[in-house]
Length: 410
Image (cartoon, one colour):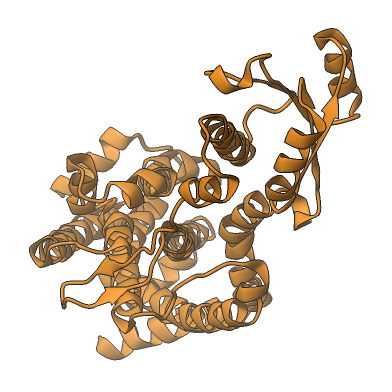
């Protein structure tokens, strides 16, 4: 029986890797992940697509000296500022016509100002808002200090904010230079890698089982092999192919980050710690066996592709949820809801891995997560084997979720 299981594993491995789709996806995978995770951040940091778009901001009620004071710090961030005259109606028309992107209306008494009006077609550019508020606010404070009688050189030193040198304290007592952007990019890239491969191979197993079921190929195979061996053979064969793809993806991504990362201003700490890559492989395997067992069972219970999609959408929802919540997970990794998600088996692999990337996760929580997921995998395999055995040979009818659950009693 072991030799038959081994033959199924080899067959699934060859079917997985010996096709053009596997080769193309292996080559393009890191670039697709970069397109989803890295490029949006690069564009937002550079101030436009390709980093070449210059924003033009008009300032109303500002003298030449004040405009000159703003020009240098704003130009460093890709913003060109100039003085403008006219009423709000004419300025609105120029913004709508594209003569400039936005305009600021300074009050007559700038030194006592508490608010400055900003008008633009796009008010969702938080980067631009932050830069304008910082530069203009600092200029107003400097003007107030100058009016109070302080020398200009003293004002420059008093209003210069210090840079914060961020260090992350590890359990060993070592302090590492890591900032929020590095943690975010690392967590987002690696979690997307985890999410994409789990979803990709889970659906592939579900469709493979469904195809063999509808083509009656499985009836021939079951004449010489047990249903449980068939299910395990498919899962283990896909796992071997996915680990090969994982290794190639990590290697290609490391080369990509090493060569192009400094040019794009992106810092992703893929290999800063070997334990991070170890946890990546560990949680991938946990997620792989958990979801692939479920997808295989639901593939056996499905009658066609549409029915398979209807049965598997709850599983996809649990995979997508951690990706949607990636910012709260990274910013508040010890919040009760996030800790609960890192222990709930269906979301644990991605959420716990993200918490480990951020750092500071208690060892007992990591061990509890692994134990809970392993226990769930054992239970899912036992239940999936029953669904697989009953549903594999039943054709001609669409089964409801209630009917699938009743199969568990057989």
